[in-house]
Length: 115
Image (cartoon, rainbow, N blue to C red; front, side):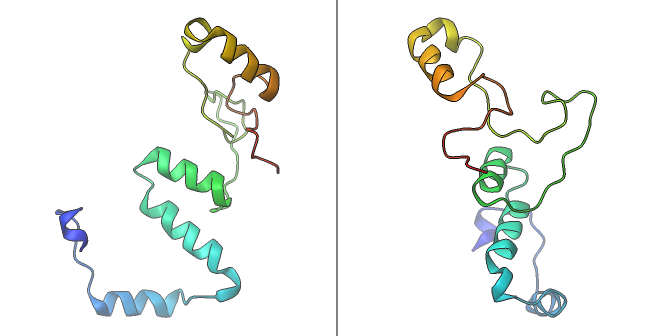
């Protein structure tokens, strides 16, 4: 029951659910995409979960922008960076990770990011 998790959430009636499903019926060929997009939307306010699920599934299909204030210069971040103090408090392991993975920035791909 979601009311325990989200006590201030609006109730959604069975009629509203049925109307939604008529407009957006399940398509088995796009099942993974549809489920992933709904999960992303449901977790959008939990930014780490939404980001992680997008990274894991690739859905929704996001389009990079050229925001002048971007930390990446345009591309969508591929990873989170290590904290600034990591290079001094854990210098040996930090250096080893940088040598294996690449620079400590948001667009360096992690080991499992094969795209």
